[in-house]
Image 1 (cartoon, rainbow, N blue to C red):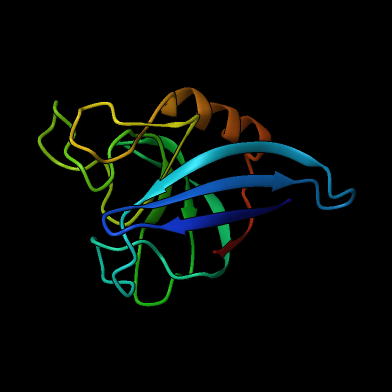
Image 2: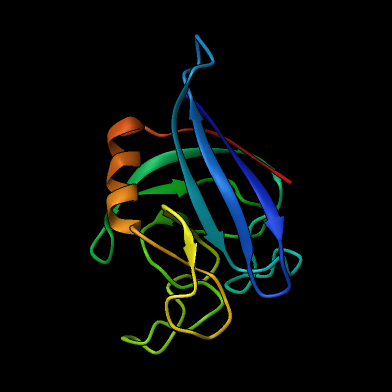
Length: 144
């Protein structure tokens, strides 16, 4: 399976569209929106990852249960694809962003907390659909 994230860069966030394709037929199997931190030259915990090709593999942790791990990101570790709503803005329940360099998936962009920044909706359901489509991971191409 192969996937692509096409991005739009903004000062405080990076918006994208993740599309999963069937490796043999090229058929589109899944599509959703992605939300990341801004492009700050791949700085750890404050930036989106650089454009490029990555292997994405399944992983499990206490915090996110089953999720996806983007491997071999230059000078970075534990870059995940997981659920959450806030990137670059503060989650009102926790007091901090839902990511520190990872990729959130969801249905659409909406300013949930009224701070002027996009948040991502329906993230847990979208993530669960992604895991059903690609439980073994995929090859990811990140581009503008």
